[in-house]
Every structure is written in C-alpha cells, then in structure tokens.
Length: 284
Image (cartoon, rainbow, N blue to C red):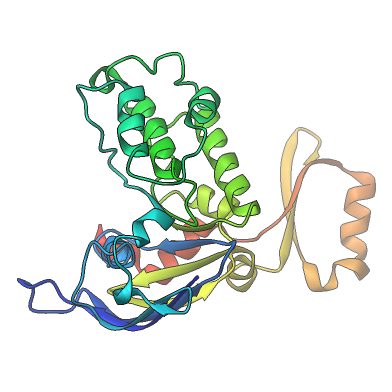
C-alpha cells in the first residue's frame, strides 16, 4: 500500500529536520506499528502520509503512485483516528456521525458499530456530555465510517477500560482480516504485541529497526525457562537453558518430584525492547 523512501521533513521554523531519511513499506492487509517516544517524528510521519503536511523530500508511493499526485479523492480511501478525539461538542453523537458520513461516498453501518461499542443508546446525547471513554469510542466509529482501505490510528484505546479496549482491538483485527491496512501509533505495548504484524521503532527522526514483535522478543530475550516450585514451606526458583532442556536431568527431576507453581520462558517484553532500542530514559 505504501512505499516510503528516504523521506525527510523540516518544519519552517525549525533549524533541524524532524524526519531524517526514513524508509519503510506498509503491506496491504497488515497492521503496521510506528513506535517511539514522544517527539521523535511519529505524528509528523502520519501527517505526511495523510497529506496534512506537504513539503517533504524523498518519495512516498501509495498503490504504486506518487502520493503528491493524489487530490481530494485520496481522503475517500483513508480513515483517521486522532489521539485527541475531535467532535462537535454541541451536536449529538448521531449528528456528529451523520455530518461526517455525508462527506464520503462509501458509508459503513455506524449504528451497528455504535451498538457494539455501547454508545448506541446515548446516540442522541450531546457529545459535550460524554465521558472521555465514550468520546474515544465515538472517535473510532468516525474513523471507519467510510469503509476505508487504509486506517491511521493514534492511541485508539487510550483511556478505555479493558472491556471496551478489547472490543476496539477485536474490530481492528477484523478490519485487517478483511483486507484493510492499518498504520498504528501507540505507547501501549500490550496493544502492539496483540495487534501488530510488524513494527518500526523511530529514534530521533530515523527508523533503526523494523521487524515482527515475535522476532524482536526472540532476538532480545533470554533462551531460558524459569521454574518456580515449593520446597517445604519455602518457594524456590530454578533457571534452565532452553537449548539443552531436552537432556537436562535436573529439570526433569524437578518437575517430577516438586510441586510446580509456575513455569515460563524468560522472553523479554516489548516494553523492555522499546526502552532498549529507543533509549527512552533520555526523553523523560
């Protein structure tokens, strides 16, 4: 869907480039995560790709055609969910959705989506009276109301309780499974682990790493398994090398003779990988 090659961008009042020669592809039917600390260029990259910012150098192809050559028709194909929900607060939820639906030729069944997200019953209530979580859910409906080919999402589950976050993540995966393409930006690594097919880490306007979450965890994790067990009244732990586990007599004796409490591989988390790759402490 997208081929981004050697893209740089500098805001007019800045002395240095915000984007410093990034390259990546986004495949059709995948959820691609663009990750990194605040201020490294993620939002700028998204704004360039949704044609809110011009004046970049380099090349961006959308469906094998220069992005710069697309006119307003481009917006018929994309959906955008900004991090901060933008609604007309004096209009009802229903009035907000109907207003934006009139801008598009393709229109999704938004009533069904609002029903699924638990806001259909309050659709005639002014959005200014909505809670933050209700606004976030309405924001997602607005992002997909035109059945877009590409969905740009910035923190789509931020501020949601686990149940409603689960519904939105399920809807994102269903959209992907039907052939939709997602560019996701979030600081919630659990969402990344659950949703993303591939991720790119941004550091200071550059992209040093692109890979799948699974490969990253295997690369940065320890090939070990930790066993927690009881011995008398005490709780003990033992760690074994995965490479030699099949012929480790101590391991098999332990699981045969002891009361095992937990046993798990010591793979690293995406939070740890995020910190390691981005050096996030220096942005704190």
